[in-house]
Length: 620
Image 1 (cartoon, rainbow, N blue to C red):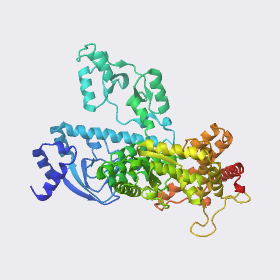
Image 2: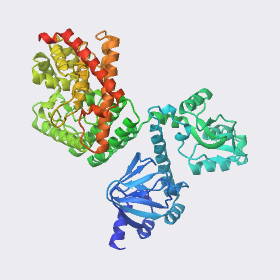
Image 3: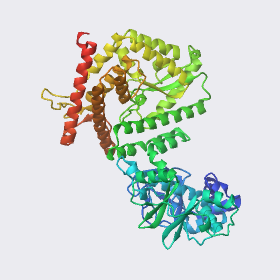
Image 4: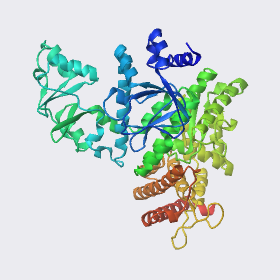
């Protein structure tokens, strides 16, 4: 065998499903393939076009998108693509393009069909994957429903064509068809109209359990006159229909003609947004490079969420969930490489990530809480210094830049034992100088993401106990919250920078997000409330009587407004591929947005005056 063919053969032997082929058949395969190079950005398969080749990524990577260009999946070295048109009839449903310079191996339909006929497991392998990507396409369609998934038309939930049989078919033939098409049910159709449905359960209860002859027609075992739903009906209506009639399968019809079937599982997928799939992919990433590559999908995802006017609260959760998943996977990979940790530890995230409010411009804030036996052990500290370095570097490569203030676990000051952290908290609260207040603000928004949560709880209890019992410390926090002035002029106009790099812009974070976050933190800490997110803190403070309900609702509304505008600003920067910042040009806003922004700033200003009065800020 020639050297090049031998290299291809060895490569195929490492790629599913070819790794399951007998050695003799694997030896023949390289000579039946062709190799093709695609430059980055090249469209390899167009949506709606015919495709008669299976392709395998030998180097580089490709992106699988829906017809509108929304990213569904990526294929890396060793992954196949283009198989949906080989396992299902019709043109390609996907746009497939080279994400980077890519070399692919191509297999013609004839070679594929011969291989699949000889080894049925090959067709089954690609058939399962084709069904999954069709489900991802349905998921992408759901996201086009502008924040109202249950308003999605039922036709957009369909992930495959209707599998049908006439009522004269035998139960045996119907079961064989269900097995071949890998479905748990089929529609029984007579003269173009659905007259029944046959499910796996029907076969178990009416055929196997009752001893019905499998040579009988499906009419003897099917559920007659099943409830159907129109293809244009809302998913909400389909859900209610399933509940009201206590069924799990719902035939979908268009002018009484069967077009598909939705199940209770399909409707559950409405709760599974893309971030769920993204976090799952990150959690399975084999190395730090793969973590970074998967995390890159967050950028178009955030842009898409903003375009569909998804609630800022949910966008923050999306970004936070991705950062959490990347952190956990990088920690697991670091432990695999460095060996088991020498003592117990807890990796905690701080600041906006801890609150679940990470933005597209958020950086890393983290700390390590180590078990007390780690104190003074140089070897233990070296292990965790190495672990922290690997994780923080991996996060930076994944789109989460390092903290400019070095408030990260790579800094020895943010890598302490549990007892040391408890003493540090006591020192910060007892002697609140400017540096102590700066550090406390970051550290007091704290959440565990990996390791021994008991270590976190011990430190967090200290935070709540010390802060709530120190009016002096709370007064200093209130003063800082009031130092961030909303950019409103004397006549309530918006004030912008007059010179420098950010001329004619205002800092929406410094003037809006920060004072709201800090005010909510003061209210929550004053009552010893464990709530973390700004919205939850405002709600908890109102429930505890620390803050009036109407004031809490106003501040929550202002928080939504400024975060929405910040995310939209970041989405534009992501689309333009420029560095993210928080400097918003008010002239880029419509009249309605400018009005809402001024209203939000007025709410913040009033809240600051109330906070200053309560804690006598002007008298400090």
